Image 1 (cartoon, rainbow, N blue to C red):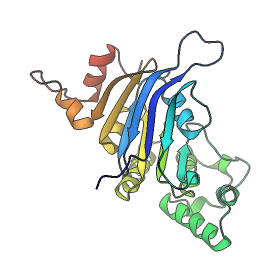
Image 2: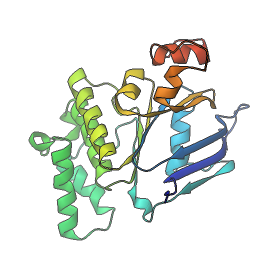
Image 3: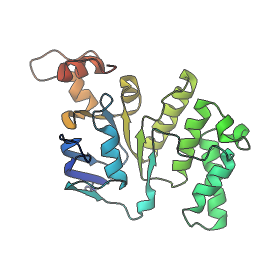
Length: 245
């Protein structure tokens, strides 16, 4: 017996006020339970706009979004910007955000401790967030989202500005979440991160889907053609420009 996808977007269109071009042009998206999909594209391709629609921060002018989970609080978002209060300590931030979930006291405490452990924040919990390194701030961003025990986790450039060790740590945590059954949409312009954590790919530019499907199938290329050696070659084929432009 097959289960329904946890999230389905159909014919999503969005245009920002005052603009003469759509930021998203008829996007279709399906997320299955326990899979990680890379949302790949250059800056300005529409990745963050799509995520803002999926979180409900913006409403599509056309199209529908269906989320098939019982508790909408279990859709979590890790934004590209730091989403915490810099004057508060890491623990104070976690206490503030867990209070928004209206949990019993013991459950709230358990989730805070679990987030601290998962994101390795133990030695930093009493430090003000503004005095933490970029890597610790990114881990705090993720820890706040994990308080929701998400079924669906939307990640928007979650490793921007971190050192290689912190990037490796964050990618490993994402892999562990997917292995435990969390559905992840991973928006980035770093191709190596998509290769590290995702089994599927949605390639977006100028608000349109250029390619989608399993990473293995897309890299294999069309029947009768040579496979792509890496994601950059795949990207160049569809966009004719470097991802880092």
